[in-house]
View 1 (cartoon, one colour):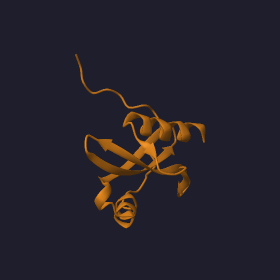
View 2: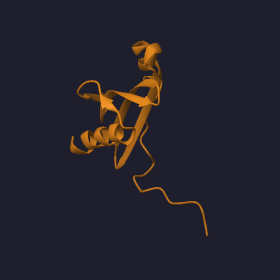
View 3: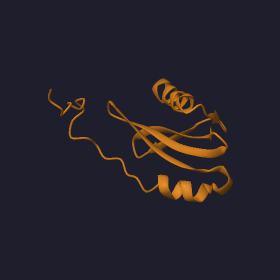
View 4: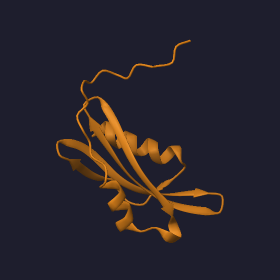
Length: 101
């Protein structure tokens, strides 16, 4: 819970956003997650961001939908976010950088 709650907080802070409501606990199969929405302002433009965060083993995944606030459609956000599937990684080892210097 602490990891997911911290990830939500960090995501909102990183864009200078404002949470619209408390994050919802969200599960996809056996994976724990959070869903949240926040308002994000860039200059004169206002956006609504809806995101889902999940823990799969030692990895964290985030799926994000963003749309101008004046056009925001909750059903479209749900359709987009529901289009993703989580799969178990072959192993839980951290990724290895591919670049060689």
